[in-house]
Amino acid sequence: MKAARTGDQSKDAEYVLKMASDLNVRFVRLWFTDVLGTLKSFAITIDELEGALSEGMGFDGSSIEGFARIYESDMMAHPDPSTFQILPWRPADKGAVGRMFCDIKKPDGTPFEGDPRNVLKRNLLKASKHGYTFYVGPELEYFYFKSPNGTETLDEGGYFDLTQLDAGSDLRRDTVLTLEELGIPVEYSHHEVAPSQHEIDLRYADALTMADAAMTYRLVVKEVAQRHGVYATFMPKPLFGQNGSGMHTHQSLFKGDRNAFFDANDKYKLSKIGKSYIAGILKHAREICAVTNQWVNSYKRLVPGYEAPVYISWAKRNRSALVRVPDYKVGKEKATRMELRCPDPGCNPYLAFSVMLAAGLKGVEENYELPEPIEEDIFEMSAAQREKRGITTLPGSLAEAIAEVENSELVREALGKHVFEKFVENKKIEWDRYRTTVTEWELKKYLSVM
Image (cartoon, rainbow, N blue to C red; front, side, top):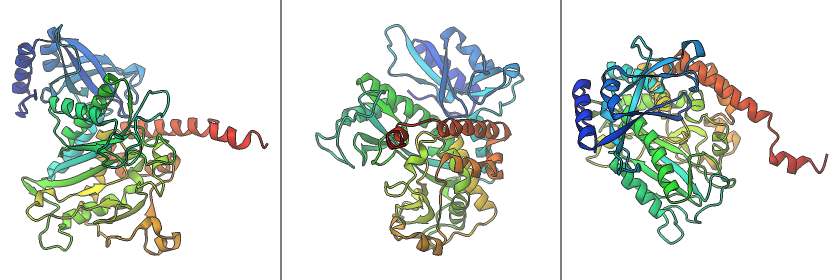
C-alpha cells in the first residue's frame, strides 16, 4: 500500500487517517536520521496520529548524534504523510504498524538545520530554482554473514552466479518482495563478486524519494536477514582480499519531462549541461569524499585492484574510472545519465545526494569544461603515466578526506553550518579513536620481534 502523493499535505493527511482506520493500524513509527545516517524512530499510538500530522510530535534531540545541545534540545517530528506505509514484518494479529518519515523542526515551526532530510530538501530547492529535478538510482551492495560476531560467509558464489553456490537467493527474493510491499520498485537483484556479497538495485526516482527508499532498503535487508537467522551488513570492506561494497549512484537532471543531460548531436550524446555537471563532480570529488565515504573502513575499499574507483577521471566503458557514462541506446534519451562509482552504502544518503548535486550544479553554473574520457585501464598505468595524463586520486584515508572537506566551501554551503561542523567534528573523533587503537595486525607484526 502506497500513500497518495498529491502535493497537498492536508489531503495526504486525510488519506493516511482513512487508510490507518481501514487497515486497523494500532501504532505508527516516526522515522528520521541523525547526521551520520543512522535511522532513528519512536512509535505513537493511533490516537496520536491526527495530532502528529497536524502539529508534529515533540521529542528530546539532545541525545541524537549531531542534533542539539542539552539546553536547546526540544525538537518536533513532523510526519510526511506521503511516506506512509504498513511495515510488512510486524505481526498484524493485534493491529498493523505503519511508518512515516519525518521532517524535524524547531518548536517555532522553522526547519531544524541539523536534519539531514532538510539539508537535501534545501539543495533540491536550489536545483528547482534553475528548473531542474534531480534523479538518482543507487546500487547498494551488502554482505550476508552467519552472525554479527564474525565474517563467516554463507556461500562462495561469484558475480551473477545462479547455482547452489548462491545461498542468498531466497533472502534476496524475500527482500525484493518486502520492498515492493513498501512501495519501493526494484529493477533487479543478483549475487555480487565477493563470497556472500549481494546487490539489489532500486528503480531511479527523485532524490528525496530515493533517500527515504535507501534508508528503508537498508533496514529491510537487515530485517529479512534476521528472519532467516543470518546477519546482513553494509560495512564497506568487511573481508580482506575481497571486493568491498559500493553504492554506485546514477544521476541525471531533468527539465520537466526532458533529460537535460542528453544531446543527440554530441559524439558522447551528452549536452553541455551534462558535461559540465560531470566536470563539477570530478573537480570536487576529493572535497565530497568524506561525505560519500564517511567511515574509517570506507578507505579500506578505496584501494586499487578491487574494482573500487580511486582515480578521478571519466569514461564510457572503463570501470576503473571514477565516473562512467553508460552507452546511449536509441530511443532511450531519458536513460542518459552519469554513474559516480566511489560512494559506499554506509553513507548518509541525504547528505551524499546533497553534495553530489552541489558539485554537479557548481559545474553547470560555472560552465566547467569536461576533459576527454580515459578509456584505458587506469589500474595498469604507472604513477608517471597517470601524472602525465593529469589523473589524480581520491583521498587515501579518512584523515586525508577530513582535511579536504574541512576546507571546502562547496560542502559547507551544501550541508549548512550546523551539519557541516557536527559532521567534521564527529569524523575527527572517529579518526582519532582509530589512530590510537592498537590493532591485532600490529600485535602480530611487532610484538614477537621488538
